Length: 185
Image (cartoon, helix red, strand yellow):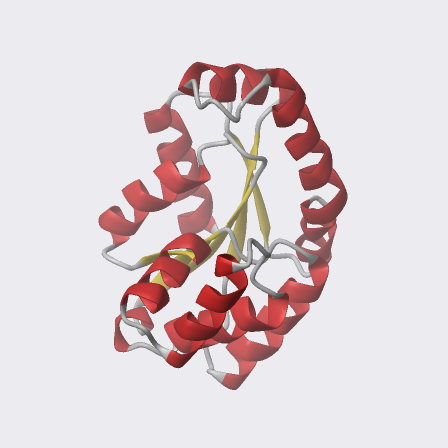
């Protein structure tokens, strides 16, 4: 039973690793972006609610994202495990997820923190060449990550669920290290 939460700064390779390892373990890769897109496409009640915020150019509120995650984790394909990517982003969301997993009897999750130096992240994101990825914007996103998401590292370390992986290696080396740590834990 593999249940993993991926943490790491923007550009750390969370999505790439999550996709690769979800295929390897034959479990769903669940990203909050995918959940949102699916809910919008299927016009679920939560998707319709989220659409109204997005149409106004507002962020989808925490509660709505949490409801979507709850709905997604109750689908049958999650019985054998899952990889969560992009959630939780705050300690408040992590506390919600902890309660939800207890309620769903889905415990034993591990948290993979992809540790990548800021300079490497900036370089990677600049190479992607997206027009909204200026160095200034990237550094700001890293600041937001450090202030909002980094406290999750301590949250999960204190619960003995944290696996730290050097994300500044080749794709294959990172995948191998994650597999090794997950299997050993």
